[in-house]
Length: 247
View (cartoon, rainbow, N blue to C red):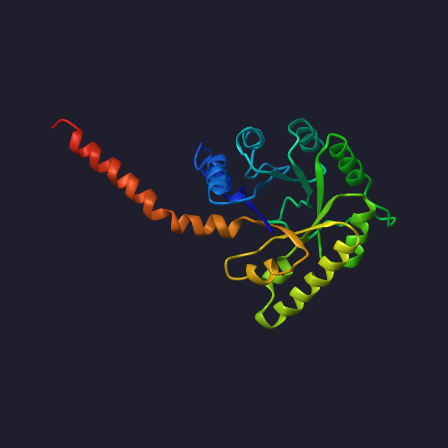
């Protein structure tokens, strides 16, 4: 199974001060060194975390796979056509949401595929970008994705992640059925959202899944597991400065 690390929230910390650190590209390179198979970033319309320049630098510097999450905003689709990430994953966006709240609604009001999404998918496929759609693990959504001729689907695992312990098994069974259905239709099956060190194992065990996208939990863990080293290095710099400064 491929593990892609989403580094959006490294940029969230940076944007809190509108400064240069922490650099999400540095986090991406560290993730690759640690064994990540790819890097995922969501370039949102409101640019709340990842910025256009981050995506440009990632395209230039990472050596694995760049998976760009995006909505159908014309400027972001245009940027994707220019930079040609290895994979583009279309996701829903709501300016008021804290994080993505569910999968794409693949149908417009008349029951047909959303023409904006169909156009955006075609535009990116035309320049050789592999397309994935972020959807709920439901047969109707899977069938609609297949009708759009995309290569892959990514299941929103938020309902599983938020389920009480007693209900989690049912959500895993739902994911298993959906993965089997998608695989039978010839789609590559991915999953992500809300996966943590505590809940990832049952999802990772689903045989049809090829790729997991995990971000917030890894970034959160890194703040703690990496803090000791960061403090030690700052302590050494401060101590060295005091020792070398003339009295």
